[in-house]
Amino acid sequence: AQKITQTQPGMFVQEKEAVTLDCTYDTSDPSYGLFWYKQPSSGEMIFLIYQGSYDQQNATEGRYSLNFQKARKSANLVISASQLGDSAMYFCAMRREGGNKLVFGAGTILRVKS
Amino acid sequence: DTEVTQTPKHLVMGMTNKKSLKCEQHMGHRAMYWYKQKAKKPPELMFVYSYEKLSINESVPSRFSPECPNSSLLNLHLHALQPEDSALYLCASSQDLIGSAGNTIYFGEGSWLTVV
Image 1: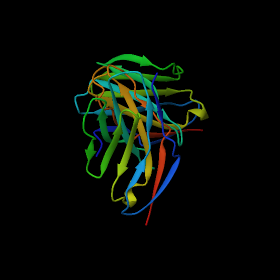
Image 2 (image 1 turned 120 degrees about the vertical axis):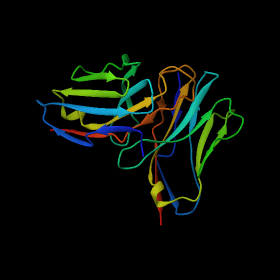
Image 3 (image 1 turned 45 degrees about the vertical axis):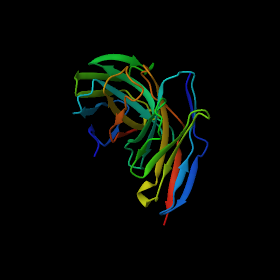
């Protein structure tokens, strides 16, 4: 069985600073994908970034990067130069190769202060 | 902007009403999903359609009835709902149901449902 753990219920960050949102996972599958989604208060679930278990390099998408440490089973999201619009709920999720379901963590609420 | 569109954005319905939520995607995806999300919780999978056929029903009560008229459209018919069914309903799509681990699921903006 797969499990995602996000240990930070809420985080604050000062505008323009970087912030790291933690995500650890548990799976016995050798091939899997890790995803981060952002959900503002409006409700839309926005796909941010993907990391494959066999990818040698950490994924990056603009201000988002994924700090993937396979041996530690962690996939932390790093947001650089935080903006007020980054205030939202962030979900870490995973899907195994050949799997038909996305397993979500409990989420982390990020608040960016001006 | 999301490529998965949902209507209506907000819906208030009585417990005896019949209503429908609609979802459309134009990404050529062959898998479409309905999720239910309560406040401050992760989404919970309800139904999955693959190639217009129902592939997964997560033991959802029959008062929720999904329909996939074609590969781009997904409906969720609602009848005799309870107040505890009030939630955000998210539609999503992906290239296919079973595939590589990187088969990303893209979500719509959601429909906020309130049952009174």
